[in-house]
Length: 427
Image (cartoon, rainbow, N blue to C red; front, side, top):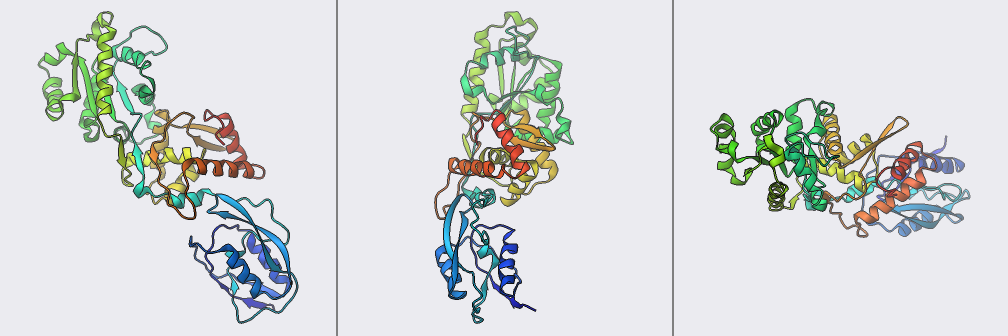
C-alpha cells in the first residue's frame, strides 16, 4: 500500500480538472497515493512565487524545471517556472502536502496549450450595487394605424411619424412597432406578462388613436398600472372634445395624473391626405422632448425585471456570444433569481426590440448583440490586482474563444457566429 497524503487547503486562482491525474501520476511514481480533501476557493492575493518556493522546499533536494500557465483571474495568462520533484527523495512527513488546486496546470512536460475560461472570474468582479442602468437611446413602443415604412405613402398618422423619425438620427433607434409582437405567445404564457415586460424596458408607449386596433390596445394598456405610467396618447382634437366613454373613462383620468400623457393635434386620420408633415413633425418633437426629460440613468436594482432584461443584454455584449445555458449560469453567478420562463421571455423581447440576435449552429443556439448598439448597463468592476473595463474583458474573452475553438466544437461554432453575425466579428 502506498502512503496516504493529506492535503491542506491553499487558496489560489486558476485551475484545470485534469490536474488530478497529473499529480496522481507524479505521486504514484513515488509510491504515494493522492487523496484530495475538500477545499475552499479564495481570491486572496497570495504570492504565486512564494507558494512555488514552499512547494519546492517541502519536496527535497532534486528538481527539474517545468512550466505552469496560470491566469490572473482567468484573463491574463502568465508563464511561471518552478521547481518540482523529479527523483525519489524522502518526503518530509512533518509537512502536509499542499492542496491539489495549487498544482493545477502542472504536468510532466511544459503545458503550452493550457486554456482557461476567464468568464466566471470576470463575473465575480462585477459589482451590481455600483452599476447603473443606461436608458438612452430611449425605447419607445409605437402603436396605432397601419404602417409600411418601405414606401413614402401615408397610410396613417403613425406611418408618417415613423417616416419622419428617420431624420432624427439614433434617437429613433429605439422605436419599435407593435406589429413586431403578433407572435407574443412564443415568448409569454399570458398577455399581461408580455405587457409588463414592455412597460419595464420602454421609456414611453405611444398610441395613435386612429384605428379600432389602437383603441383596443389603449384599453388593455390603460388597465395595466405599469404601462399606464408610460402611456402617451395622440389623437385628433375633434375626438378629444367629443363626449364619450374613452374621453371620460380613459383620457380624463390620464390627464388628471399627467397632462402631457394626452396630446391633441389637428390630425384627422380619416382624411390622411390633409394631414401636414409639419403637424406630424410637431408630434415627433413633442414625444422626443418628453422622453428626454425623463431620467437618463437608474441605479441597478436586482429585483427590477427591466434591469434584469438589460443585464442579459449587457452580458451578451460583454461575452460576445452565449448560449442560453451560459446566460443562465452567469445570471446565477450574479445572484439574479430567474426561471427558465423568465429567461425565454427576456430573450424573446430583446430580439423583438432589435437589441439582440440569434443564430443556430449545429444543434446549438447562440445569442449576440449586433454591432453599433450602445451599452444598457454601465457595469462596475471591483478592483482586485488590477482594474478591468469592458474593452479589456472583451479582448480577453475573444482570445479565449479563438484558442478554445481549436479543440472545442462549441467554441468553434460560437466563433462562426461571432465572425459571421452583424456584430462585425468583434472577437
